[in-house]
Length: 84
Image 1 (cartoon, one colour):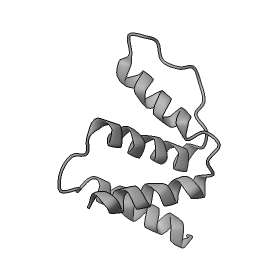
Image 2 (spheres, helix red, strand yellow; image 1 turned 45 degrees about the vertical axis):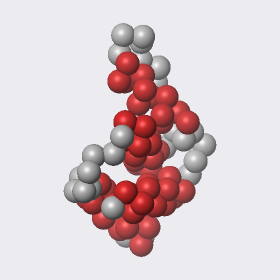
Image 3 (cartoon, helix red, strand yellow; image 1 turned 90 degrees about the vertical axis):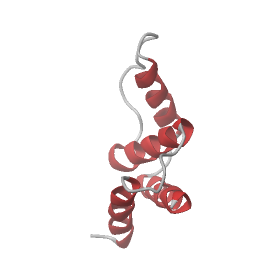
C-alpha cells in the first residue's frame, strides 16, 4: 500500500477522534474529500429539494469534481491535520 493511502486511512481514523466537532461547512468539506478520494467524481442525480442534507452533500462533492483521488486524499489529510 502506498504511503499516501496509509496516511489517508490514518487521517480517516483520526477524523473520528477530533477534539471538537467541526462546523457544518467543514464537515461537508471532509465528506466531499472523502468521497472524491474513495469513489472519484460525483455520479447520479442531485437529490430533490426536500432532501436538504443529501443535496448539501451532493453539492459539496460536486465541487471536488475533476480532482484526482491522490490530490483529494492529500487535501483530506491536510484538513484533518489542521483540525487537530
